[in-house]
Image 1 (cartoon, rainbow, N blue to C red):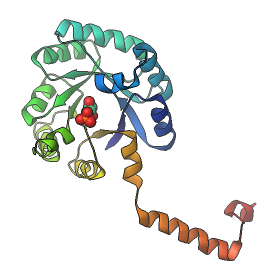
Image 2 (image 1 turned 60 degrees about the horizontal axis):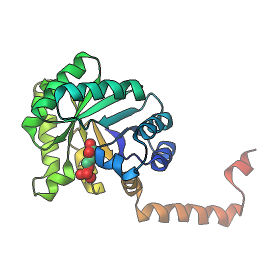
Image 3 (image 1 turned 135 degrees about the vertical axis):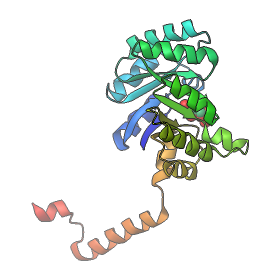
Length: 226
Ligand code: E4P
């Protein structure tokens, strides 16, 4: 399962890429507007931080197929690299997805809440579908279960579309999604820190340091092997 980060904050992207195994960045209009800055500069800066090999998923704001395709083409030329246009799952969105694929543009169908939506998106040629876990959990609709069934359906019909689970609020949701065989998750940078957190890890590291110091004092491994 790949980890992407769901943010357009340049500092957070820089830090995450330095410390964590980040496969890419996803944005949506809400995430972009949070930064309240020049859109073109923002998306090109994201690309220059993450490099061409990491995925960059940017959402269209158009609603008609023709306009979505136009935006996808413009964004692909602007940001280059591994680019995916995020298209909400609508009738126009599906039409646009097929055209984008025929133009060689990567497609992520987003705002997925049901298994049938995911199957239709896959048949339209989407590379990824993004089901929204926490928003489903908020309406007592078990986001993890929806992802589980989407993964099963794709396996059943040998569909190459990958599941990029989105909308997470806690580590438990990410863990449960990892058991479904979903291909990727996109998470808020803070959630990356949470995934690592365990007090016993801190205690263990403290104990190692104390035991070492009792015998070797201030000296480090590097001091003793040179
Ligand atoms: C990603 O594709 C989605 O746009 C995003 O994860 C939605 O997250 P939210 O439910 O926290 O807004």
